[in-house]
Amino acid sequence: MSVLDVRDLHFGYTPGRPVLRGVDLDLPAGSLCSILGPNGSGKTTLLRCLLGQHTPSAGSILLGGQPMQSLSAKQQARQLAYVPQLPSSAFAFTVRELVAMGRYAHQGALGLASSDDRDRVTDALARTGTLAFADRTLGELSGGEAQCVMIARALAQQPQVMLLDEPTSHLDLRNQLLIYRLVRQLTRERGMAALVVGHDINLAARHSDQLVLFREGRVAARGCPDDVLKAPLLRDTYGVEVDLWEVGEGPPLVQAREPLG
Amino acid sequence: MADRSQLTAGRLALTFLGLAALVALVWAGCTMLGRYDLTPQVWRFRAVRVFAAGLIGLALASGGLALQGLVRNPLAEPYILGISSGAGVGVLMGRAMALDAFFPRWLSEPALAAVGGLATCFVVWGIAQRRGRLDPFVLLLAGVIVNVFNGALILVLFLFASPDDIASFVGWGMGQVPDWLITQPGLAWSSTAIVLAGWVFLLLRGSAFNALGMGDTVAASLGVPVHRLRIETFVVVSLMTAAAVAIAGPVGFVGLIVPHACRLIFGPDHRVLVVVAGLLGAIFVMLADTACRTVGEWVGLAEIPVGVLTALAGGPFFILLLRRRFQGMP
View 1 (cartoon, rainbow over the protein chains, first blue to last red):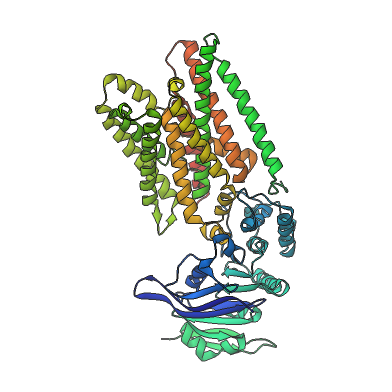
View 2: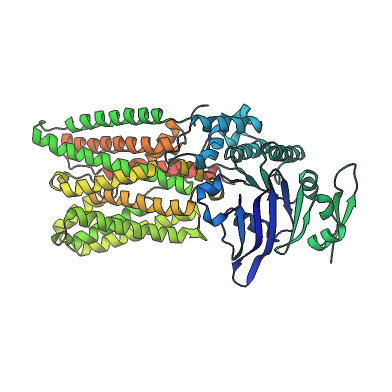
């Protein structure tokens, strides 16, 4: 069953200059999908449309089978969570407090936590390995720990879909792997779908069920990693000669060799 | 600390009741202090004045806190952003044009202050925002510039006033809690209604201000209607500031000092801070105004406007916060 269904989505910041040109996408429950593509290909713009920050000029976004624009901000938040590239907080909240903010859409006007809210927060902290530093502030954590806190906060929302915007771009090798594995495990355990926008093809291919390759605002290829990681396709998309290396089981490793032109 | 986020209605109610009792205690103390004998008439005058001081403190402190949460900058407050001086221009314009001859004062002064405050807010917002995103430092700079402009407008309005009016305008322009409010019950009631309604509005937005601390995109993904919240809060804070300015003129820096002290004591949770900043703001201005009144009475000099005292304390405090903010930047 598809929890997020994007059909023929069009969007442009200025008239006559489309950024998204008929994007199709569907995310089955429990799947991890990675969106790849060169800079300026429309990945982040798609993410913003999915977050309701941009209104598409044409096409539709169905969230849990319902048109997104028919849902209130809180209804959307109960179905769709977002993990930013750089975790930040302007005020010195503890990790537990930040994760508790994930319950905003489930609470009343005063924002008072119920026992269910507290249980969900503790569960999200425990599941992401952040319970040990629940009383620390974000500034006292490493980049990897802080990103886990953002995932815990998104998990506390109990979403059907989690959107992650380049979640590993500023992390070391170990933390990159840990974050992808954590997201992978969460999708399997909770039946939640995850959509990750990123640039690391190999990391994405190794952990995703589906890869979506963007080129000039269109989906150039979509499918399982083995189907998408083809040298001619990658060359045309990124403008670079690539070598593919078969290493054990799983999709081939991609290595950029030389820029074209 | 671990349970700080586990806010319950009981804990919030206890905090509120404790602080409300403290406000009542300070109010009682402030109404009794002074050089003159505490006759019923003197007490009534003082009581209304102390109540007005509390109302002004509540409006400015909780308004400052909301603006800081809204723009993620602890330096934002109604005075610095020019909302207070804008409201001041509105009130003085009404007085210079003798509008109270045509409309009751309880209606004309808060209404004109609201128009001035909202207009300033609109201009400052317009300068600082780009594609719906606010640059906090441009916002502060815009506030400073608009403050200077409003100051010039106030001086122009002085040209149209009689010498007697100028004397009262100058005192009011420095931020002075008046003795005459007891003679204007309509103004007292209308200002009280605006401030209390605004405070309740902010109280219901505490968790949204918390979420905004993580950035607009994250807050929106949590279910906060960010754009609507910004507009509503700016309007509500402008109205609360206008109500305070209609009574006492622009009293500066209360919205900076009190929320900062509250964050140090109670932590960053805006659900708690809206309550405590409002009540401690009330206590702060009550005590400051009583100090201004009694010192003047005892030494036999003219009264010091409370705005002078808050500016003397708030100016260096603002510079201290600004320096600390710059130290954290590359």
